Image (cartoon, rainbow, N blue to C red):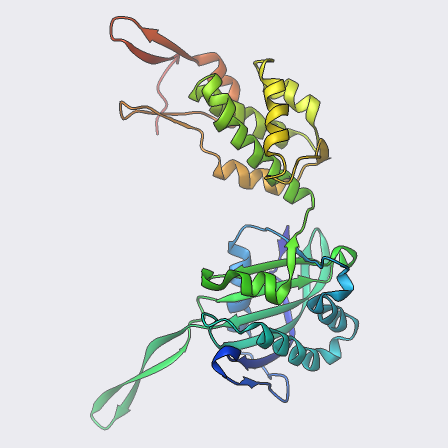
Length: 352
């Protein structure tokens, strides 16, 4: 989990990078940008708002041979080692980005390199390097009084409500390649930012594994439980799975299967499905791991707990109290109507 509320921008360098394939230039500022009290909160919100609003999927610098060959890893380390030299390093970062800007689709734009302090990640206060890029300009109107007339002036500029690209490199978990968050609003050049410029892989911590295992369970519920049982059991399997993750700090696969699978015949099916699909979800060798509560909360929001019927009726199951569905919902077959039915028991209707 991160907390960016008290984050402070210590230094900010602004450069401009063009598209190398179109022979556009690169512009490197001679000095860091001097922020005043008026612009500082606006630019901070411009940089950090996208990271507060998106799901926390962490990355880490990577290289197929060794981390020391990852250029951005070395440049980030250079800043963390000597923050007073961050402006000079920001020029190297911008040059590196320029070298990757050689595809016709890549847009030119301003590059902002910030040294940030007082960020909270994993309950630790750390520094970070922020790298941001603005690419798309918006039209906006200015008005000016000229005698008895109010003149309309069309101008172009950056929309502070939308950051095009950005990353936060936390001075945390250096040995693994640092923990990194990244955003990219313009998906037409996704490989350019993540792969070519940053050269990152997913950070495989407990948050990553928890999310991946729950995604794997969703796949098993849809591909195996639903055909073998019915929609209610598919929903209830995911219900029990999420609740297992919510009430335990440590995942243990054997205990998990015994607790969430009502039908013991599905246990070997689960293991076979893991052999077939485990690599797809990056959990092929995973049988035990610490559970990340934040990942469980995110999963609970995304997992559907509704049974949709072809008679335009929905039955919503409760993820908080799964025993209610077990006790008070029954499925059957009506011979006269030649239709399935759900029988729901209750004492009184609740006021909405």
